[in-house]
Length: 259
Image (cartoon, rainbow, N blue to C red; front, side, top):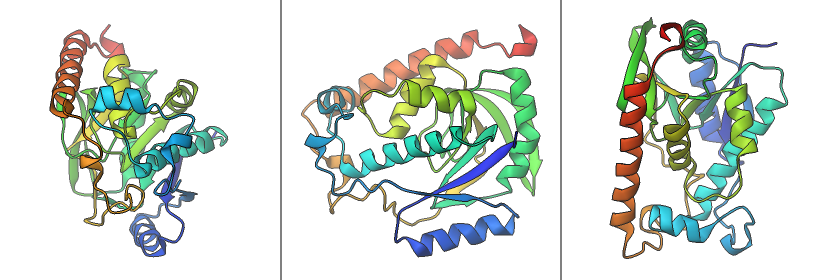
């Protein structure tokens, strides 16, 4: 079985962005497979069978935009593609990802350690811009970038750079029913509750300043899309609930070798 397959999510026609990330990865000697992003910018959301607008309003305090649906479906598409391969792990990069070191070299060093700590791990966020409520596990120095593998009890946002195990990708697909949040919010909701989510800090991958084309939505900012009067309350409830669960999991967390 091939150990690690790298995928890049790229919107059709975004040739400059594809060339840019291709050059970045080539500098590290990393080959990748391009996955055509799902373009949701012109979706009629009333016709999307796996989108739950009512639950989105209750959970997010607003409805989603087509770009968010497209981004979510793009990650479902990559997970499905990965599971059809013989690879053991999948490194998934959006085309604005900016590696600060060789991510494959880092994963080659860290994944064997993670398998010992948690053989059931699901997802690693390696492109996060914030980290809260985590347990440090091991430190690595790759190409001048020093970072720490952590159990991310409060799973970080952003999906610019993530790493799947086969079981994590399988569960993501198997448990998919209705979209009620952007995919990064969903990953936090999911992994904060189930555990088995990990990250590195400081992040070994950041992003360029280029705006996401997948998330673009006919000029309307997603953050202000049909916000309900209770938007702030919904957000605070969501954050407080997730943090409480994360604190409980942090207190109870024991690496496999220490149980």
